[in-house]
Length: 582
Image 1 (cartoon, rainbow, N blue to C red):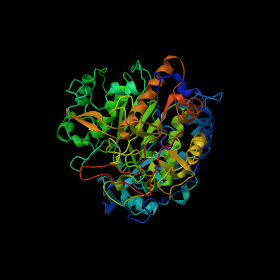
Image 2: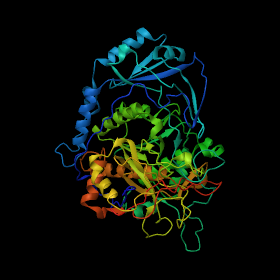
Image 3: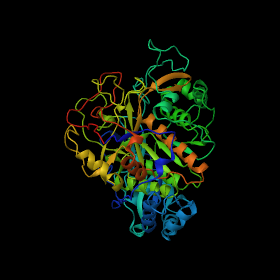
Image 4: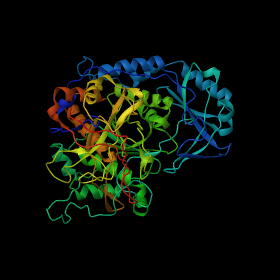
């Protein structure tokens, strides 16, 4: 069950959150000076000088360790349906009370007295202080050497430093500095084939209309919204205005309100607009003239709002200069943040940095104690990551972040029923030996940083008890296994600039699963119950007690990277995993 199980929802039943067992909270020691870019030169990134007088923001993570520990203890209880405290979440202000510390004022006063011309703001919970000043000032005060890092894969760039040292006066009050040594999000997961080497990968334009001429068998092998309802037995898509959901977007990924409406009208869905747009990347004309900038965001918005209709939906876009933890810290400090968050982006765990990952986990815990869920895609390039695309011999076990976070629900991809109705799902794979090769391979594996969690210990042990589980050694057998669930990820119809495309990816399965959770939240809220919150303890225990509610994925592997127009997928001979029974 490394790809674990594709969820077979039966009318989006409430039973998905009725039982679980305690989870173990794993905390890795804080590292102030990250090793992420410690040599200056990083594989896959080029560097250049930066204007020393230009302004740069540094975020100081305040030492709230005692409060963090208490929140972790509470999360273990409120996410465990066997606990008397299950679903009895904290309010936003209660989380702030637990985190309150005098260290916040110490950091604020030090910045004012020490950093020339600094401007600063503090989050509502007092756990982060954001400070903007000249690069030259930060170089001197933090012992840094800021330069411009640019990804050779995607072109994403950010001002970062090989190392940053917290001054002695703050060592007891600060646990990390963000936007210093943590590399930004390097790539989005999404779609299918590359278009002119830019943007998300998708097919050439095709007629995806619901009333379009079908093939000779009277069937088109696409994952229409109705197909999702059939495969996962979703009997009602109406959220009745209850709950809320959000899609995360990075950089200049733009969604088109016009395309969203066209998609909804084409498939007879409830016409609804984005409720709140953070970031302003919502220009329909951009998707007409530069559709490659819209593949990811249009896929996310169209699919999440197709499955969970009449659920208030936010579009949350952040600068490519930022990191996952920066974004999630903002989410955790937003009182009315949505209940469910879908993330279709990732980076190599090895490039994220321990301190940055700790900050992300801390924010996810805060959200979990308030009954909020973070859903993350597992990646589209098997075990090797996006650097293996079209690069024969570039193979490795390379865990993806934040897919490996212990506090998110990670979603993989399957295929099958969209092509042959009624058939079993198999792992989505670009392997040319597959009967109907997809253009991506579902990511999955084991974290090199985070330990196997108690709520998944039995499932992981069952996987290792099987024979022929992998293509070779080299992965961390004690790591957090991912993904947690998997759904269809091949041949999703999407409109970009009014033109139809087909897209593959965990970028598709992730917002779909997030939408399923939103529908469950809507049903629970209507019944006077609490939201799902951190779902993993319940999901794993539910499979252990009621496996018939899941589709067991027993065919396929993830040893191949995504394919592209230039040639077949790169398949690794000694790296990858096979699906197994259980």
